[in-house]
Image (tube, rainbow, N blue to C red):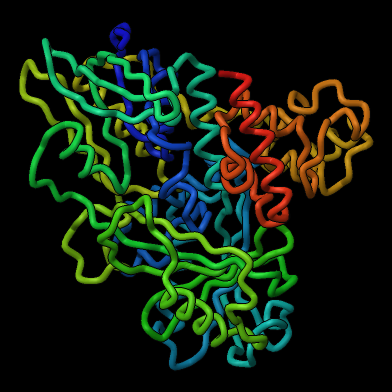
Amino acid sequence: MSEQAIFDVFVIGGGINGCGIARDAVGRGYSVALAEMDDFASGTSSGSTKLIHGGLRYLEHYEFRLVREALMEREVLWAMAPHVIWPMRFVLPYHKGGLRPAWLIRLGLFLYDHIGGRKLLPATSTLDMTRDPAAAPLKRLFAKAFEYSDGWVDDARLVVLNARDAADRGARIMARTRVVSARRGDGRWVVETEDALTGKRETVRARLLVNATGPWVDRVLADAIGKNDVHNVRLVQGSHIVLRKKFDDPRAYFFQNPDGRIMFAIPYQDDFTLIGTTDRDFTGNPAEVRISDAEIDYLCRSASEYFSDPVTKDDIVWTYSAVRPLYDDGASKAQEATRDYVLRLEGQTGQAPLLNIFGGKLTTYRRLAEAALDKIGEAIGAKGGKWTAGSHLPGGDFPAAGYDAEVSKLKAHYPFLAASHARRLVRLYGTRAKQLLDNAASEADLGRRFGADLYAAEVDWLIAQEWALRAEDVLWRRTKLGLKLSRAEVAELEEYMRDAASAAA
């Protein structure tokens, strides 16, 4: 067991909140360490509906502060990471006799357009569904629809890019490292960690501890920190299904189900359609969450109410499920529980402070990090100032609307790339795609091909730069090429990465 120097801030949890806080803190001059027990974004942060959105439906629950903050963040985040975040238009079909009257929807969309400082995103419009192409895949139920703007995000990449930038700025970022215990001693936190691969244990010290473990926040308080009888979060399961492409329109659909829930149908990875989400309370182990048969039936049945071509289980090519750790505000229904975040600083005078992070959502992660840094400054002394709003995540240093231009630049520099390959590389890595491709002058220079357009050059980059260790990390979090590789190809990739890990050890 080895002993390390004292960090200002030790973060437990490698989801979006933990990585966002680590990045903000190290950028202000704090010394920072972060431990994630598995892979980055392996829990809640890669199981979202993948939206950067204000949360139109949250207006119904009077969460105006949350909605305004989220709306303001859409264009800030788009400018920070235009490779993994981009605008999307949403079609909200309306029919008389629906759950919400037209005037209420119009009012909500008016607020949506005007309380969030929208500058680049197009405003809301009304569609004639007897003529608009958006009606083509739907049943003839709607004469009118509303169209509004929000954003799309590659959620898992947003997380790993925050981790990468934190590391680039000097933070110690530890994947697959479990916090065994954290105890106070001599005005500091004494944190014992264990490497999940080697079993090696290490003790580090920190002035302040951040518990940003999402669904595990109460468990960490109980098991690692030793606080008993804690109940701060309400675990809500959300599941999604991915189908072969259901429609060609680039717009997404926002449906209002008769049971009061909402559902999205979203263009996904060029060749697919994403449908979700569900909302139901969850009481099991978050690491073992899986979509249930009931949820599959619900999503298929609900989607079939709207699409003229019914959605069946046979259409499904992939499912994913995650547990959202919502702050427990006592709401009677899972879908009514607040999506806002709560930060709680604990520690008596002379004690090392503990900052617990409850709730939150992808869209407001940067603002949550700023609020966390305010608390950290109060507890151990402020350093630096707010800086992330005008920053770029790795690879995102090009204009918000400049994606197509970046693709053209990459294609010109590497003319052997297929157009679809160039587009995918810029979507994932932005300007850093050139570092990944390096001096390649032909497809052969990219090394072994594993399937689709995945080559050894990209896999090696992900191992070296983004903590990828297993095929799952590459295929389902760093990319979504798991949708396109065969079982045999996945096995070959797994063997390649296992050999690479052995060589590195």
